[in-house]
Image (cartoon, rainbow, N blue to C red; front, side):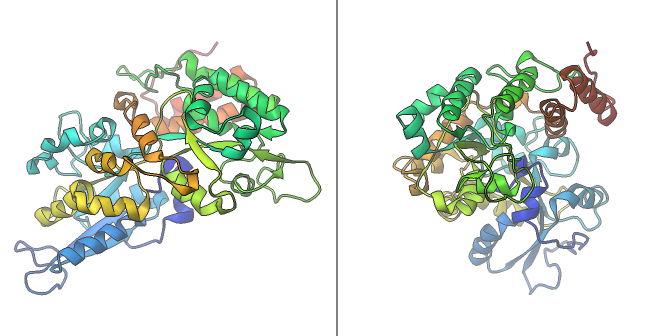
Length: 448
């Protein structure tokens, strides 16, 4: 899964997208023949923002030679605006389509996806991680979308640096040090004294500022929840910057990627790194499950084997892809067969793990795979076991449909404060104003 923590555009644009038309009608007729297929054949159209379904489609077509699947990939930045009109009108709507966490909680309340409980999927619930299962269910209890994956996050770090500075590279011992924000910053001080930086940029602490007893961004009364833990992001980010615990390498910049392989120019920002300037080496970075295969194993090959993953101060997840069947599809039975293979077929899912390294939401396969797993890239660590434990700690009731936009706006306000552009009060006031403008229905706190 390549998903939204790259804040829905850069990552997807870099590794996912090949633009495809989305206005092709399924052309299905009542007897199941469609789009000019042979007698008795069924053609399915799948719309997605990611190419990750290419492999399961290949497997499904091999198993079902009378089924032809047309995967139409729509760029992430155009996905909602392109697909929503087709779903609402029925013209050009696919049989199956995916959704990501950014708009999932909105879409499951619409009449876009059918209720999968018509196929008794509720009988599967005990086999899935709770937060993944529950996020696909609407307020009426209908199961609109399922996901084969789970995307909890952690802190990936360099073993060699940990051993040098802390005297151990053991993920459990490092995780104990990182179990509080204060402990994380204490580690930043030790690393700085040894000539290293804790993180590439301040964004790596953002996932942990909800605290150990998090509240949703927006409560049932449509009030913005500015908890003390959330407000602490201002102070922790400022401390990281002022004490030079971060390398000032913005996420997804050339310097950010380079920091996983080699010393980088301090404060390179988005510019090309120049020779002869002060350099520094970065210890770790916060990323979700998919960051291992889509970021580190792809862009940090020079340091392969020197990495491990551990917890931060609190559990979190980033991204995720859910999938369901269009309510108006005339090929629902075949469409469900595909989804059942994708999310509930043990043989396929075992192959899927081997093919992609994805961390699955389907516990029976994950528990089997995690028993004796060892990843050479992570110095032999069993990261499946680690991430499954973190996923069990995620509470779906804290997820709202506003989260990504609010995270982005709040992060920008914190950044303006850390950069010295605004005072903390000014940054908070600007954040409230942006929230009110973007979501007039949300009641924001009064500014001090």
